[in-house]
Image 1 (cartoon, rainbow, N blue to C red):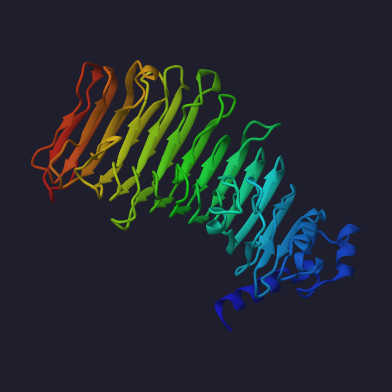
Image 2 (image 1 turned 180 degrees about the horizontal axis):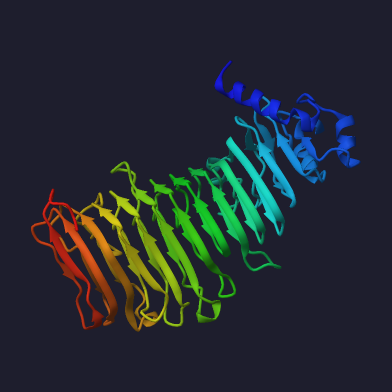
Length: 444
């Protein structure tokens, strides 16, 4: 007996008292009992598994009103067209289950594999299960060009838990969190132990959310259409929110764009304060030929932008495609940006210049000077830079005259004989120090 079968047997045994030990096949009597309220746990196979297209069966099971719906492992994928999720329900995908986008379907630009829109009290558990779409198909005719075919879209939801799922090869994002026309932000959402791999636009997009936790997840190998990030926190309008966002113990790797991207250009002071925290996260490229931009990119916080705090604590970047950290168009009037006890390791493409400025470990960049009267409100607390190339540890770059303001803290340059910052132009309250630390001596 292999591990998958063993796990399946174990789960079946666990659930047998609740579902009456019914086999994984069509069962009209059990379906009738669910409809009559005599069962609150249902097996999706009771509605009739079809290896060519099981959409009707799975949708009927979800719509049945059962408190818990189990999607059993059937030996072949559950082939689906778009499915709508419901609230007040626990959806359990057994280990080995693959929810697979049907070939030739999903022609609509916004067709997602699973969508929860406006629902409350939903849990999706899928340890060992996969949401899989067909990214290569969507990138060519007859599919209209689009970037919104998600594996799992959570729109205007409240009290949602997603854990153990792998979302791959979407025509948009692996996971998508936003508001909807009624509720302007998702609220109380947790993603735990999830993976997003090989998605078209982002591993995860966070458009609008309050009280969002992303815990012990991995977002990797995004590529297809910009921004191509592991995570992109980017509201569309000033009515949206990014408040009490916590991302911890997660990995962002080998994404074609920035591994971590926070772009808040559409928020204003009227949007309310932003609170975003990344804790013990890793951003890296494991292959010098894989491309990639910055490990961490934060920007678009213009004049009149939101107040609040964006912080990275105990985070690490390794061999990023370009800069370890890129901070762009960051007004000193907007939310504070803070890095504490972070470690930044050498970018792959060390010394070249490109359209976006010089490649240095930490780049402070003004792209749109009219939006930034002064650049700053940035703090580095006991952060360490590991870089063998003779270049500035941190550099400020702007074609137009823009002053620095409130750039503070200490950067330890480990293993460098010369450690320097290039912070050109006039500044106010610019107290950032770069301290050389010999290799092997132990950083303070």
